[in-house]
Length: 339
Ligand SMILES: Cc1cc2nc3c(=O)[nH]c(=O)nc-3n(C[C@H](O)[C@H](O)[C@H](O)COP(=O)(O)OP(=O)(O)OC[C@H]3O[C@@H](n4cnc5c(N)ncnc54)[C@H](O)[C@@H]3O)c2cc1C
Image (cartoon, rainbow, N blue to C red; front, side):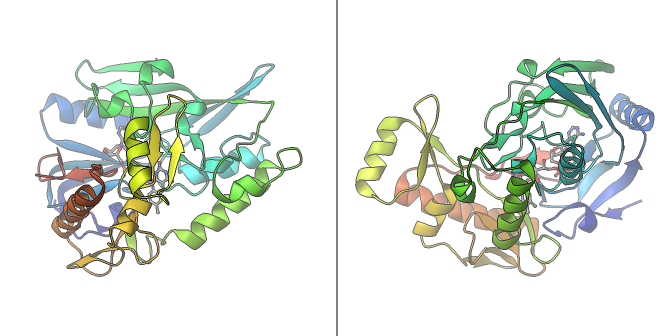
């Protein structure tokens, strides 16, 4: 039966899917996905819908993951936190803090589920998921096998993993195991955290600071639909950065370990004069240029039109190509934003 996806995407897009199954046990999740794949029925896994833009109704079954469970084991040096895919990411961060398991605090308040975290290797305030990922368990749809990948096998990089590349659409993440050292080291390289004292700071103080900054900076999707950062921060060669810095001396960028530079996409969009730009119900947020918002009845098409306009204007000014971070969905599956 056609079912509304309005509550299953944080942009609040009014689209439908042909049918919706909500699964709260791992066995049911595996059975449901294996069956749909075997019958060649199109399916889309959705956790919290905080990284998806629907441009039309989805002609297939949406499988909404709601599996729950957290188990902690330890050895001399580490905590191992095994989590079912449907657990809420922020609640996991809170659970860990409450149990003196530190490390995830910089990634507080990232919306969505634990199972989606490895897909784009979520990250914030200098810490990425792969820093603490031990193993990912998943159903491999084409072989109908339950497999476990180590951190290395996931090929994590900035907002990337094997699950968005070679194994795209072939995997349903069922469980995630994190490995967090008992000897905690704060990460204070970014933004407001830089003012904290590494010798005295606690994980709870970092958590509180990150929550406070995020709540003051990012629009709440329940009030103003959005998917967080709409574009990845582009990474350029050092020579290109030097060229740009000559032309635009205030350009914001972060040097990477490999000598490349990560440019602040929000800065590029703001400097291109695009803050507040609107197409239909889709707009560039007035304060956060990196966030596109639903100011009322936006369609996915309008969101993509606006995103393409931003990509073009930014390229014309800086010769840098922005890439969309969320996954753009057409009627039959993922599409390129330029389609
Ligand atoms: C306000 C806001 C702030 C944000 N801030 C950040 C941030 O700081 N850092 C960051 O990295 N991201 C951020 N995001 C993006 C988003 O929170 C993450 O991408 C998150 O991991 C998405 O989780 P989800 O459960 O909502 O995934 P969904 O949107 O439901 O799915 C995203 C993709 O993953 C796939 N998927 C989901 N679960 C599974 C599974 N179990 N197995 C296989 N495939 C699966 C889906 O099919 C889809 O392709 C933000 C989003 C919002 C709305």
